[in-house]
Length: 272
Image (cartoon, rainbow, N blue to C red; front, side, top):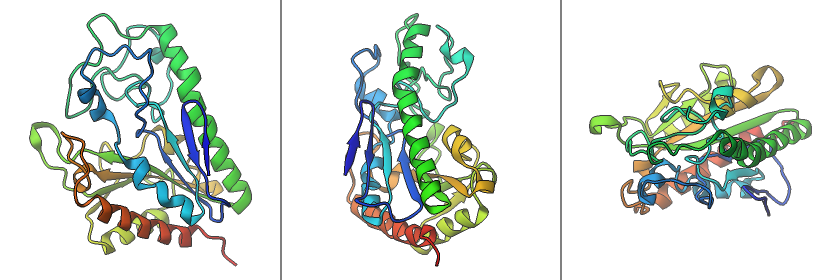
C-alpha cells in the first residue's frame, strides 16, 4: 500500500507486523518549479541518494513501513536541524546545512547564481511544506510503532560516494552511525554489522562524517526503546556515479539487503 502526500510517500505493509521502520530522506527526485538553481541538472542530481528508496522498497514484504522524501535534499535537507540563521536570506552553509549551496562533496559546483540564494521567505516556505511534512510523517510512524510493539527499530537509509576529494577511495561498503551510542543500543549496531560482514561486506561504525545526523538524533531514544540507526551504503556497490546507471551488481545488493531485512524483522519481532 502507498500513502502518497504532496512531498512524501509512505510505503506500508498490509499489516505492520514488526517494530521496524525505514526511511529514505535523500532519494527524492521531484524538483519543484520554484527551485531556481543555476547549475546543470546532472550536477545537481549528484546530491541525491539515488535508488536508495528502490533498494529498500521490499521492506513492506517483511511487515515494515518505508517513508521516503519526494523532494530533493538540495532543495531542503530533512536530515539537518532548523536553526534561526538558516531562515535568513543570504546565510546558507555550503554543504552541511539545511540549504546547501554546492551540489555535493565530490562536486562543489555552485547551485545558485551569484547573489541569487533563496530568500528568507522562500526558505520558510520550504520548511513549512517539505521539511515539516517529512518529520510529521516520520514522527507519527515511529510513535505508532512504539505504541503497538512497545519498541521501535528505526533504520535511516542513505548512500555515500565511493571516493572523496582527490579521488581518495572510500574504504567501507557500509557505515553504521548511532551518534556514539546515543541514538540506539550497541546491540543493534553489532547485529547489523555482523549480518553485513557475514555477507562479505566491509563495515565501519561511527566513522567521522557518518556518525548520524539530525534524524537519528531527533528520534533515537534508547532509554525508551526507540532505536535509530543511520545506515550508509557505498554507491560504488550498485551504480555508476557519473552516468547514474545501475551496475550489474545492483540486484545482488538488493538481494543482500532483503537478507538483512529478514534478519532485522526477526530481531525486531515481538518476543513471546
